[in-house]
Length: 116
Image 1 (cartoon, rainbow, N blue to C red):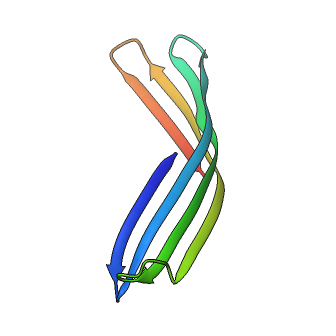
Image 2 (image 1 turned 180 degrees about the vertical axis):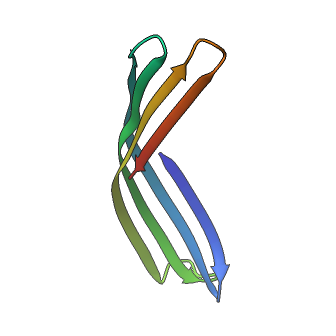
């Protein structure tokens, strides 16, 4: 929950804005992988990781507008917004290692990521 209050004067009017914002976020993270030892010199592996998230954000605003010095507002601006969204992130890795056992090692990695 977040409260935002703002008073300002501009162009002969006063604006007394009061907002109430709230948000709800759910997120699930995961990571898994495996290595396969093909033989003494060759290893193949993979990793999958990511996060899946849902969010909901609400904003309620009320802003009385009046001439500067007036005791009652001329008008009141009322605004409400609801924003829903998903945030998904998936990452993939494939890796290969060659080790000849005589101080020569080769590593190759390929990565792919997707964010929405």
